[in-house]
Length: 107
Image 1 (cartoon, rainbow, N blue to C red):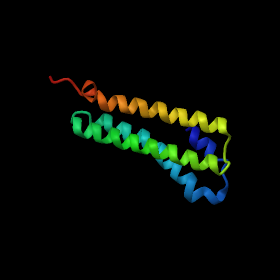
Image 2 (cartoon, rainbow, N blue to C red):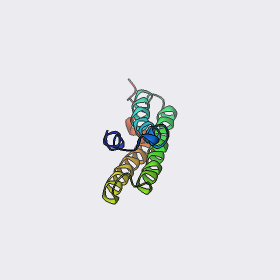
Image 3 (tube, one colour):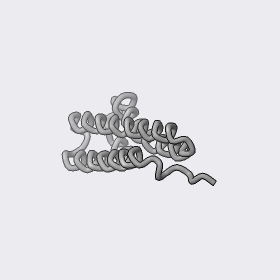
Image 4 (cartoon, rainbow, N blue to C red):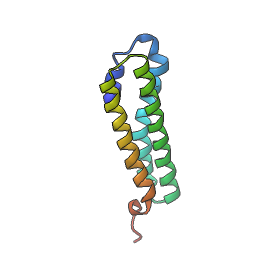
């Protein structure tokens, strides 16, 4: 939501390029994580969706770099959002490496 709110201030000509792309990728991280959780009964599916979430997080990081380079936010805002992406990436990486701990227990 932080990215969404910041992107509201970007120029209209970015609506169908940078703004749309960064909103989609940042939202997709959450959507893929939720889908991973729903598929955790099958470890391979769980890891696959976590990997998708991680990829979308990396894409968001790239769009943040473009937005900074275009002057749409400050260096401080950029650093904060990049740190957030890195934190999310670390959590996703940990979940992938420790996927078995998230699987439902056999009855």
